[in-house]
Length: 202
Figure 1: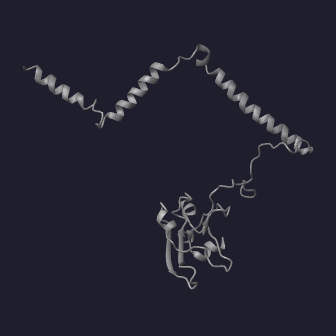
Figure 2: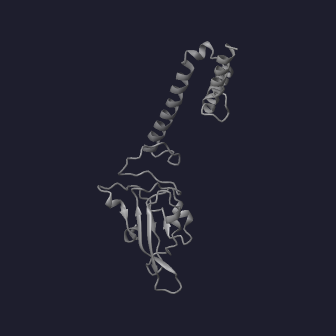
Figure 3: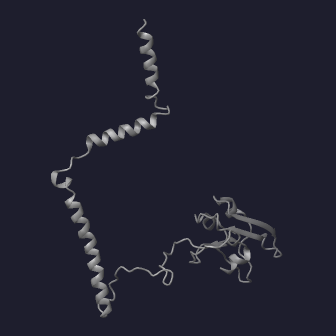
């Protein structure tokens, strides 16, 4: 009986490591994956263990791209194969890199024909924004056909994560991220806060 109590205590101590919902369950899973990889990993051959094939393959791939682009650039100088593009380095900021059509850039508010913002202050963009960087103050619109308009539309680019949720959720297509402007750096936090007038000028 004297030996059974220590064994029972030891067993209880070890059971916490095998509890499927315990704090050590994830650690056991990692250990099992590591053991499986070690037991199922293919052994490297002597030739592979020298790493010579990998080094030669890397040098060959780099050289292939280098000489291919160099040859095309030389031919372009003489006016040959102009329709075959070669890799180039964009000299930013003098020559910015072309952006994809779906790129999310600086925001802007779209306008109606009379120059007023298309926004109807429905608060959907402010509600969906995960960074809470949009603040809208609604007011009654003088036109009876339009219920509301934004008396103030504040967008803090210092908080914005450029997720594009505000563009997707807007029912009036009032806010877009298609200005093509990526340079949002400023010297102060206050300059990164855009009001309605500044957003409509973008």
